[in-house]
Amino acid sequence: MKNPRACSRREFLNAISLATAGLGAGIHFLPSRALARPEDRRLGVALLGLGRYASGQLGPALLETKKCYLAGVVTGHPEKAEKWAATYNLKKKNLYNYENMEQIADNPDIDIIYVVTPPGLHPEFVVRAAKIGKHVISEKPMATSVADCDRMIAACKSAKVKLGIGYRVHYDPYHSEMVRLSSPKELGPFTKMSGEFSFVMGQREFRVDKKLGGGGAMMDLGIYIIHACCMATGSVPISVTAHEEPKLRPDFFNEVEETISWTMDFPGGAKCEARTSFNRNVHQFRVEGKNGWVDFKKQPFGYHGIVCESSRGPMDFGSINQQAAQMDDFADCVLTGRVTPVPGELGRRDMQIITAIYESVRTGKTVAVRTGGGHAQAIRDGARAFPSSAGSVAR
Image 1 (spheres, rainbow, N blue to C red):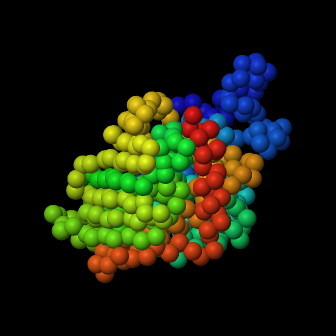
Image 2: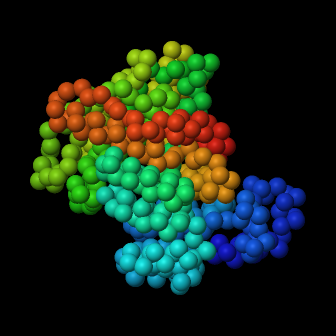
């Protein structure tokens, strides 16, 4: 695979011709940070946790990003660090473990730490990353409790670093178009929503470990439907009603739920009927409004392969690398000071909704969703940032 830093030098040698040709989306790749204006340089990202998502999606995506690149890794497995160093031509000094990651504080190569561990471990590493002065992306779900979300947000604010959550579909063109069509001048407002995100889990992993995953299908898959509904309506549910369906594999799912069905009621009468499971293969999402509808026929929350149409006809935006768009946008936010459209407050909001769903399952009653805590303005700022920043990245 190509060395991002070597590519940068070649770009520099051809900077004038590249600028004339309009390549590189206006980004000049310079070999020395001392020569680069802050908005022109690429930021170094260290991936913390080298599991399936980091290996299959984030690492390869960082070969496509324009405003950031893979500068280092943090892992508890020395053999993984060596493999990543060989694959991505990483400097030996940029390979860290969980015990010595505080040394990253003195490493100018690394600007952002992306925490890609199981959710139960996100708070510890986000707080540690913030304390050493690095900007942080936390994979979703943000944490396994609202209290931990608060701790993560507070640590980043105290350290004056940015915190973003890995909501990649925020940058997908089909979802961006859904948000645009939610306007009353278009198809919206959307008042009826339905979706299911389920797959059959074949082998045990952290997602069925209560301590590490925080829950089962709801935490891992249901969160996508929750977030999409909030995007489609531009609001937060006021209440939820949920129930856990009988387990077909109780020995396997002995700590977490296997299947949950739930309803979300939004301001103005909008409603979503949803389901998520680790023992079905269903993947769909649909929204309807007074003037029309949007229907994700295939892979609504997939990395690629989305098939979507509206009452106006088929959509065809092609496919983008969602992870590359997400990380480039966060890097741009760091470079320019712009508010990220996916801040920690959005992760906290979704955790509050999930908490209400679990409470409804436990009590058998409809539960009010409380998304306060002084974060309402940040959530509104993120929502306002979505159409312009995400739309421009996605397209």
